[in-house]
Length: 399
Image (cartoon, rainbow, N blue to C red):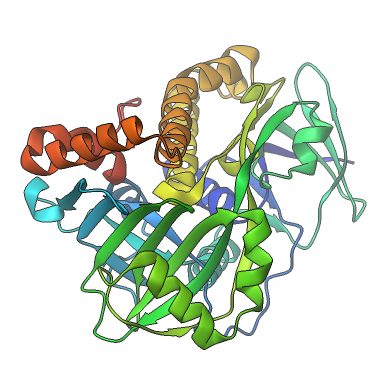
């Protein structure tokens, strides 16, 4: 006999776990299950090579409210200043947290320990965790989603939350198309040690070969995202550590300091991807399952957290009316409708930024420089960019 749940979340990564813990806090009577395909390794050893994400200030406040994140913890580093520049041109701008009376513009968080912390909180909650397990089949009735797991367990849910990433197999089972458009460039990611410290300073640097980002991390490290033509990626991955450091220093300059060490390098393709809809019958998409964006502005996980926030707001408001409303057509349609504008805005802004600064036109280069220079002179012009970096967007009533 199938086990009945109000909400089944498919994917126990950062977005899925955050969603489950948020629902458990704000709707404690809700029955929640999380299905996660990957077994979490019981032994964790921090290393130089931990991958990182950027958390906007608004995301930090949301996670602090859930008591699942502490900005003073060792795997989080504050971003107090962001500098945006265009290599070879005069334009640049700087955004400082003090200008906006904030303790930080955001934080850089190391994924491995953060994910482990969320997983530990899941296992110590009333949330039912199926791990490792995955969905073998997904069918629907008017009142339920009927789920069969690879383990043979059967679940029924009023609402399925798809949070298993950009390559989501669950999204395919729900028959929701996902249109992708690859960028001509890929990205190299690595952690870089800087000799004289990073001073909580982040950089967005646009070059003739592609955008670059340096985000401050613990232990005098930067998290590097270096975008370049796909044909150049293999050559850079094959370089010795010293040769890679020299190539990075030459491409970036010395604004970020003297680079002294590089960790393990990895690469991945860059795509612009969006689901045809963020909902279907008794199903909603959150995080990368619904939208995949260029990493240069560090907005991906923050966008996913805003999916989580709206979903929790709708569920808690519907609980006041009727528990049976969760997962209904009106419910899922309202979720998709309310998320559409924010997702479109961020995806369009990020994509336009990349394409604008990847253009070699002298006219556009002059316009870019004038825009950045004007922003640096007039604080009111940089406010929209700063608000986007801090995640201060209009959406719902906020939990």
